[in-house]
Amino acid sequence: MPPNLTPVDDVLDEIRSIIKWCKESASPLGYFAALYLRVTLAIKQAIQDDRFDDGKRMVDFDVTFARHYFDAFYAHRDGKKVPPQVWQVGFEDHDGKDPLIILQQLMTAMNAHIDLDLGVVTDEIRRKHPKASVQSLHHDFTAVNTVLSSQIPGVLNAICGVSPGTKTYRKWAGDNFIKAGLGVFREDAWRFACALAALPAAQRKNMIALRDTMCAPLGRWYIHPVPSEWIVDDIRQQESTDVVHIIDVLASKPAVAPKKLW
Image (cartoon, rainbow, N blue to C red; front, top):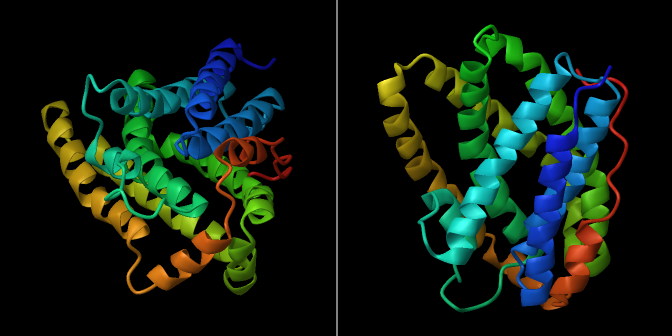
């Protein structure tokens, strides 16, 4: 019997609320929110289909993971708190010059949510479910990676529909290149989770702050990708600037996850 999915539905409602605000404000921050909606729908379906070792724990994982994104987004939007450095990199108005292309918006957010948040959440879930060691979480952690990878072709198709330049360079880089990059992100996050698990509770906060500081430069590189800035400029010149339409395109129906998740 599938676990209660109401908490995941609440996450989806919150994402839709963020998307609504971004569309009303014509904010490109809605690009990642749209991607997040798509991925969360795919994760929900995988939980419903009993594709994970522990569906109930995955619901908890999904909700906890999303909360880190929500906290960072609202901290930036409302200006009452300061989000982690790595999130702030993606939120800032980057020198007030050329706008970020769609891929830059997505990669800076993914850098924050995967390289920082994912390891933190994995450790939080381990502590919340004391019978689950970090290693016992690895099976489902890997399964999530498979679900995420299954979404890449559809997401890139959506981006290419509004960004001819991205379509051109996609032919050169290929989807597997991006899937491999996502896998590297997540494996690094896994190592971070293992490092946190080995620390006394009193030292975790400092380790997380150090991780935040270490991850932020990669986000800045996505914004100024020396020596590849000319590629970004080329893509920007051809890319749609219709923020609302781009959000709608990115939020399209997710792909069905493969039957084998590990």
